[in-house]
Image 1 (tube, one colour):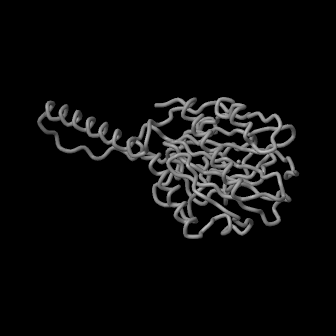
Image 2 (cartoon, rainbow, N blue to C red; image 1 turned 180 degrees about the vertical axis):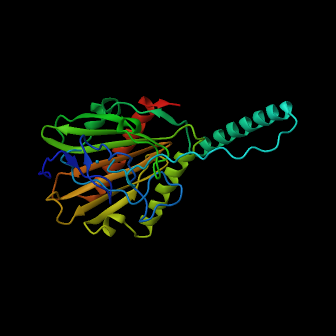
Image 3 (cartoon, helix red, strand yellow; image 1 turned 45 degrees about the horizontal axis):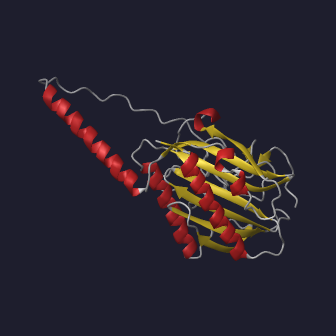
Length: 306
């Protein structure tokens, strides 16, 4: 198996620039976004089409963050012109505030119920997410081990500008097996104190992408550098899918399998470099589905809940 030159970078999300540095670390301001169309929908956390995982990256990509580079956070508007003074209505103000808080709390409970579970406030380490009993299931792997790190949006040094609302940070893990890097796992953490809005948006976007695939629209093929061999929905998360594709002239790798799924306010991408020239797409999809379910279970067990 050969890899692209080790130039210190690795491919990023579809339509984006390569990610610098460590495996799967997103380009500053661009959390993983494996789905979406040519034009971002209003209110989406990430704009534009995501860059999909290359095979396998010389230097680790959550698979993904899409969108445009971060901009300066929007400036808050100045205070409005004060109105004419009136009589104090302390009782009404206190009552109004209490009612508003009750309404906001109720909305938050309802919203999180809609996304099926308590949100995550923190992600586990790569070793916690990918212990040996999970990695032992990787085909043809000898002594795989996981390594990587979590990088917050603040550490990247940019704020939540346009197209970046809700992204908190990214856990980027590569699985090393000798000199090989057969699997990359990226998990992007999104806002959890918004009553479930960011989580609901991620799930809706994934469901939209699933609908596109059911109708025969695959953005890998639209980009003109890959052919989709097979795909299927996966059982991990609230919504997700696995896809197997071949590259056209990008690398001599035979094929790649990738899983995208959303669980509450975390978006996960798993990229698997298929080692054999002669492989069965259904078997690869089965492995990806099982691996994704194990990742979700480990995330649920080791992740910090809000």
